[in-house]
Length: 217
Ligand SMILES: C[S@@+](CC[C@H](N)C(=O)[O-])C[C@H]1O[C@@H](n2cnc3c(N)ncnc32)[C@H](O)[C@@H]1O
Image 1 (cartoon, rainbow, N blue to C red):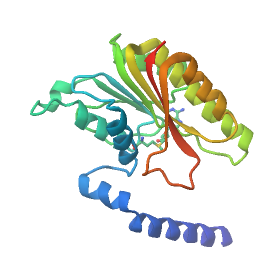
Image 2 (cartoon, rainbow, N blue to C red):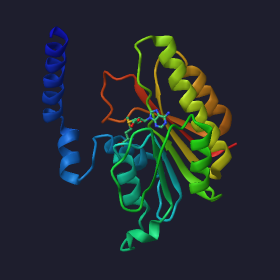
Image 3 (cartoon, rainbow, N blue to C red):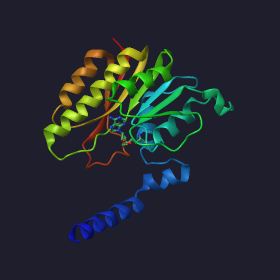
């Protein structure tokens, strides 16, 4: 009974925070499924990641705000959405409501069979942008959580090394704390340039930040 009361309180606080969050309001107005769209938008406005006609892979895509944003950038002006077929491939553990022009795959990125299916969807085309907003369920045990985050980012780097075109980009969510410096070193080792960006839409109290690798070494 006590637990239920506490979770109701947490829920109420979360709902209040959502209602007063300017990014949530903007997301509603502009038709995005989540405020996360504005993190990607800011990164894109700084680095110009997306261009019409590119091939993009979105890892950890649900509910779909990054896919929605990327899809809007990839569609050449005035082109039918069908022109995008297969050029935006999204993957998540959780189902994602359909977005026109987005080829969604349900599965765990750590699973080799799922990785093989993702590779099939990419059909051997060089990928321009791999983006990963994947975040594991956190246990609260810092070392275990850091290992989970690092593992997902390392797998995303490995995927990027095999599929990115030479001037392509990898964008990945990371967390400050144990394992962070090693992930920065990994980006430095494999990319000609790397950037660390904490977008304004990322909550100050959150340890999340984004690493972007530009151009393969
Ligand atoms: C912060 S949400 C992504 C939000 C998304 N970028 C958007 O704009 O709507 C993180 C997502 O990562 C997914 N995820 C976590 N671990 C994953 C894994 N091993 N394989 C695939 N997806 C994973 C979660 O299911 C969750 O939907």
